[in-house]
Image 1 (cartoon, rainbow over the protein chains, first blue to last red):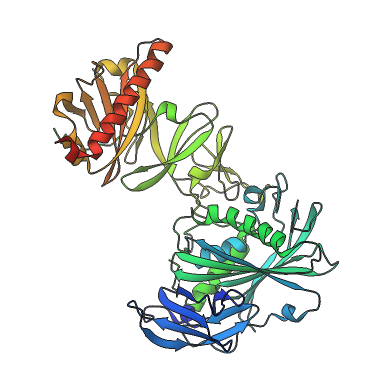
Image 2 (cartoon, rainbow over the protein chains, first blue to last red):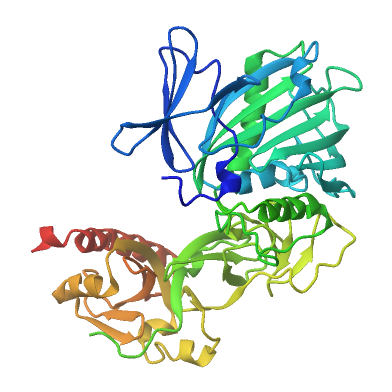
Length: 286
Length: 232
């Protein structure tokens, strides 16, 4: 049943599996926005995604796109194509699909935590931050009205071990891109290539309003670490975030003004809440 | 045996089960509550929610006399007021940066909290003329599934249970041959905590031994309360 889901949430593309993990022998039966869906790869390599009824019968074929190493689908009718990530065409980058983490919270809480720098020294201790370097310097967060994307820019933070390949602490430059309410990509100083940015992407698949399968990836200039080393680094970070995410109350993201207090360092969060509220997102929020 | 008075003070933990410089979560009537103790020993009970991003404060870390939220390191003093925001060290936290506090006091070897008022007299009157209150020895907390009425009903008749004050049950005959008090915590409509307090012998060795004995007896009692069919 999708009739009770707001159009802004419904008309988005969502990742439901990585391309590599959807093989002929391993279909994926899952849920999207509370609706049972079933993804399979046929013998000819084509992918089908079906909406399934509670009793397991096919309701309808759903649209499918295979891009950026992932299988995307939608329960609605998205305006236009999937957002563009030109970095995927850049020479020398390596895509590392990190897997799925199931987290008991709303997709909004997940995105907001991903955009949040001030928690680094308290949750990712001696990795993405360390006391006493806790101050968040002014940065910008605003919606690009041409593309209707949220960007947080000019972010910087001292990080003891910014990426798996980091050998020493460094001032790291960050940019965040939120191309649609439940997708976020981080651009951070690459230890592997001077002047370049590595990407970390987070793609929560909302199973329902307060449960998500988080798909996440890295797109990096890194010739030293194996995929496994990079995955372990990123999984370690996400497991630390999970402790927070599953213990925030309410689990749904509060959009009411004043429901939670904010300071200057929370400008990305404030803009994010305003943006999805204006968009009419009603799923996983309150 | 049900008391007609309503219970305003509720026990949520043995005093010795909350160490200095520690924090943990307790439940009272389905409310998620953080209890914590400063390094110098002051116990507090707060709504288990950071006003900033909703993190449960029971995950926080006690630093000296402050509770520091796990998520962003906001440091709250015992009054509930935030005194420091690490992301903005120069900023004076506004009055709205305040945890929601409940009245919290220690008596009878237990930590009590009150979400309606802070009437200290009502708490000290709870067991004013009870022998145990003069020198209480907290022994053990047990938790049982069931409503308060169910659980009280299941207390074996030979224990001589009587509710001497709202939320406080006296057992006149435990197997140890002495009176004990049960502080009743209604965690939720279907889950009960019983905090067991005996009389201290004012001798550490004797008290340690007694705590072990009563602890053992309490485990047996918990089994009986959880398995009423087996006891018929």
